[in-house]
Amino acid sequence: MSRIPVVVKVLYLLWLAVWVPVYWQHNGVVNFLWFCDLANFLVGLGLVLESSLLLSSQAVGVLLIQVVWVFDFAGRLLFGRHPLGATRYMFELDTPLFVRLFSLFHVVMPVLLLWGLKRLGYNPGAFRLQTAIAWVVLPLSFWLGEPAANLNWLYRPFEQPQPWLPPTLYLLFCMAAYPALLFWPSHQVLRRLFPASAAAASPGT
Image 1 (cartoon, rainbow, N blue to C red):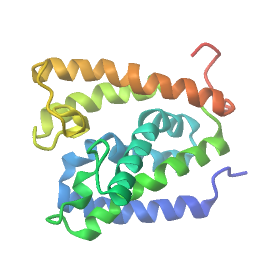
Image 2: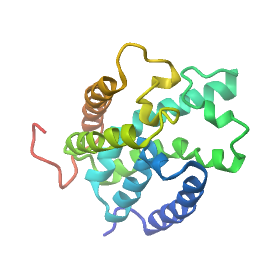
Image 3: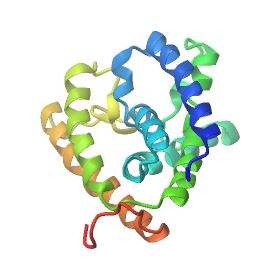
């Protein structure tokens, strides 16, 4: 019996079919290297395949980022200021409103990920998979993305200047910091909140 309703899979794929060409046209294909944007593809694949590993890896990788995005966006809406500056682009009038509205997927994705983990369970192999993904995506973001695009905050964390390290060394720092400071804590919390999936790795992963 399917653990993810067919209607959820179909609606998600329909949304993806609209979101991809809109973002591609207005932001370019390299923009999909943002962890949150890339997660949209992997979450879709995870839903269709009912893969706890894929959904778990994206929860490890972007759940906290998405929550921070919502916090920053809500701060601007409610109090007129960005606590972190992560969502300033949502209020830049030179970007069409309908394009900015597509970024509201950040609000829905945490709920969808948590719901998916409740249905499928958490796969402890998620930390290793997301780390491997990051070690591919971060260098690609550095080599293919312009510094102005600041993909995955590789030049300016939360749009704040980073004067301490040259760009290449900061890339290496990020490749260590993302797993250590984001993925591992998220992994530890999620593995305690959700039961292990049927395909979970052996204890100690």
